[in-house]
Amino acid sequence: LLDAAATRARINIKNIMGGFVIHGQARVQPAKLVRGLAAAVERLGVPIYEKTAVTSIAKGGVTTDRGTVRAETIIRATEGFTAGIPGEERTWLALNSAQIVTEPLSPELWREIGWEGHELLGNAAHTYC
Image (cartoon, rainbow, N blue to C red; front, side, top):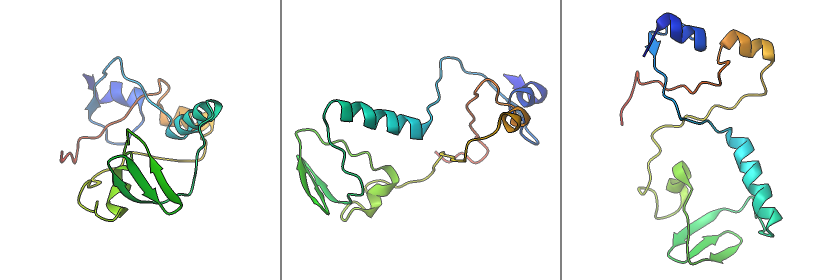
């Protein structure tokens, strides 16, 4: 557990009351992850079709606005977008999104913010699940 001063030394947040350190965690930059995964599968010869809307998901097939993809295993990774698929409106309810995207920050701004150790941040002030 960290008191307010120790926490503020790591992440400069106004009115912070404290924090805690958990070792063995990792952070992922989502855009770099997606680009890296796309490059890896393309090197294996797998085509990627962007701007393709899914209209239905069923066992063994995904119907899109450009045709049907058939596969033994289908992984639905649509998260909050699931509700936009006809018949799936109540399958998955997006309650929270923790993604923050900005333009690259300058070294000066990073020093002002703190986060020199690439800390991960959670906020339980309004936890509901």
